[in-house]
Image (cartoon, rainbow, N blue to C red; front, side, top):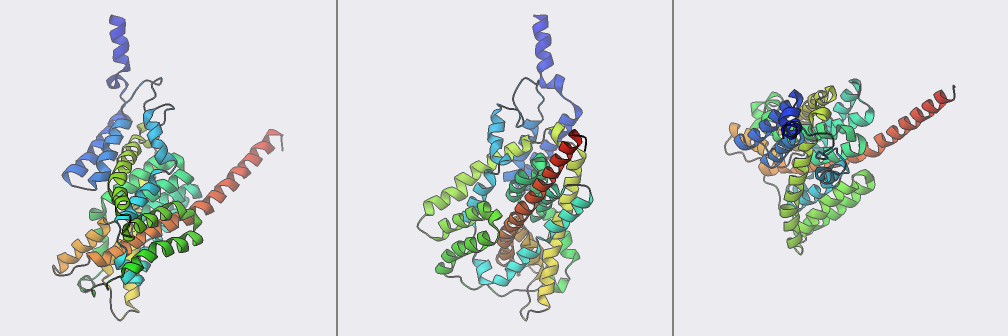
Length: 396
């Protein structure tokens, strides 16, 4: 009996616990606290935080429990993350709940969503300067789009080994939008600019709303085929909503389906952060680069709005440029909050939704550009390495 008790004690999580595992469990608890106490993206942070705790409960090697263990239930669920299945499904739900009316009523605001994507490409260059491979740098840079599903999708294609840190960084900064963006918005705008009131958007017809997802998909997919899976689902979901003949499907896509996928994605992404895979120097660099990328994206949107005002007779409030990142609808809400602090009667939310939804499309297009280009570079590099190894083997 003593031997059995001894063997049991040796297999418990208490005896196998290491300080890195304990640290990650504390981080998971912090995520949960931020979700509950501060209400920072609770639908994301709470599943991810609990997943971090799940992924850092130690077990003996012969037990297949984690997302990296063959035969584990969690690994089967994590398949949707590691193979890019969940992100398009989330885009379907986003499309079914998104109203593109404000963007269609003032098309020039699309440029703000495009301008905010500068954070992606600046961070790509910065990551390469820090020693990351180009394909790893591309996967890291997409964090600047503040789009968790797109970050997961691209990293699963280009840098699967970095998927966990990239996903956690992307969703963490999405949750911290109300903390990160306001200081940047104040830094790059004057009080006079923040007080600008914009004209009400025009009414968009039903016909325009139905034509847009079809035309939008054809244009973007033909230009950037790499974004087909994400944008195809986004525009399909929007067509379900705007057609008014598939409301039942649209409701399912934007409620039950997206909720189920969010639960599974959040839990397994969190569970992928086991200390052995997550606590590395690369992970710390990814978090730093992610913050840098997000700040550059926010500043890029605001500054481009100021640039547009040099040529516009009817000025736009530069604050809405910050909504060019695709954290929908949190960035637009932050714009509304900052604007109303200056002028309680200034309603910027609907205007900010235009660059906000344009940012969703923009980040997917950026991913569609980076995926084929960097994949080709990766294949060439791997082929060159194979030739080098073969040459060394035969003594050349």
